Image (cartoon, rainbow, N blue to C red; front, side):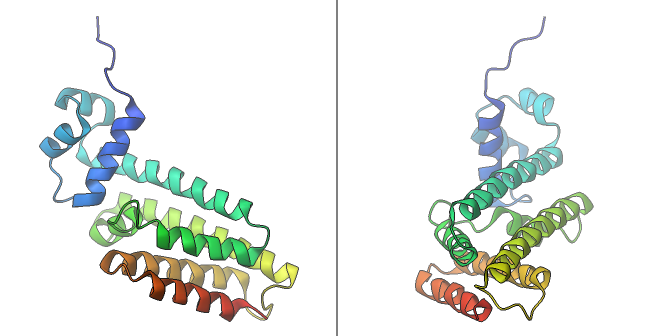
Length: 192
């Protein structure tokens, strides 16, 4: 008769994500994961598969978490402009809780060029986020907050690239004043 799991799957998955986030995929060994996650090697393999499969699961876990948080930020804003401003604030201030940059940006820069599965996951998340940003821009155009002469989808892509740039920059410098200035200037470009 098999033993029951002695750990909460989501808790140890979050720990694996944190370790990959801090060290990167290549620098994280299975021994590192076993120790950091606090589970037996056999339990890790039985529950999550090999290191690569575990890494893909951490990308999925992060994706769900960040998508929900972004949607919450947007839903709580009473205007499109406020929603975008709050997204920038979330991205800029999110570096306080984890100063290792954006997990997805790290995955993209470390693995996406040579790992097709990682590339596909990152591309899907980036496309989803661009769409979300485009919808927010369109909302602002329809309400009269933003200029209508530019395509909302293209502006959503530009907004997403700006947010990614901020996340990369935040990892190299904690100059939040500069990051907030970039966010404010982006919003000014959208406004009528």
